Image (cartoon, rainbow, N blue to C red; front, side):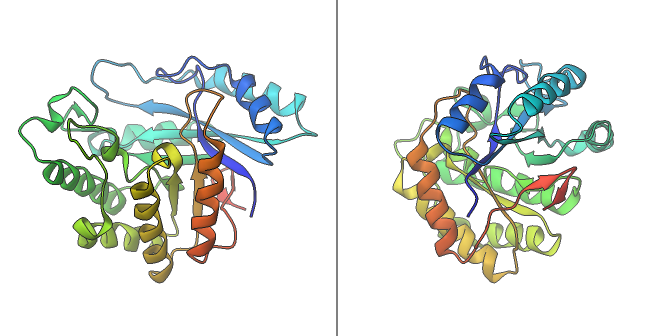
Length: 261
């Protein structure tokens, strides 16, 4: 199974200050064969401007591709926050440049960020907040198709003022199975996001996702750390690879010009 990271951010994303070169050097040091930068673009995001200077982004990563061509494969990707109100604008943006790979993610719902300290969690139990988030993800996979992999289904488990933020597959099995069924039938990849992999409950959640994705005919899995700094939890990557293998996937999906390789 390839050693790679297909979800990382640099100073081209509004929430990172990392130099992309540092990501490349860190990946090489730890023996990765391929990485893909997936900088943020959201057409609406409360309080933060997640625009992206595409021309500058491509110029800088293209230079790194040339400099390190004998040491590592570097792809140019995008993490697109999907708000279906802006479906045409999002599609136009994705088609405006030769991105290798696009992650579809949900970061805000009804103009409210799914993040700590926002009104999204106000007067909601953990189960209510998680259900609302997953239903929003389901709506996206049912109504948008211009992407390669669906990102961090456990995003909502990062936040909220709950003693235990973890998400359990069995609690939302009907919704999650429908998400996985849509991804599988449309040839989309499921992302394994290692952001919370220090927690055993996160590993179990992704194990359940992967096993059911495989049963439903899912073919493609991508692996990403979602790291906004060069240093990352390398043990989490190793654990994720083992979970992916145990679920029956022999290889990780990689992409070029939005086509699976």
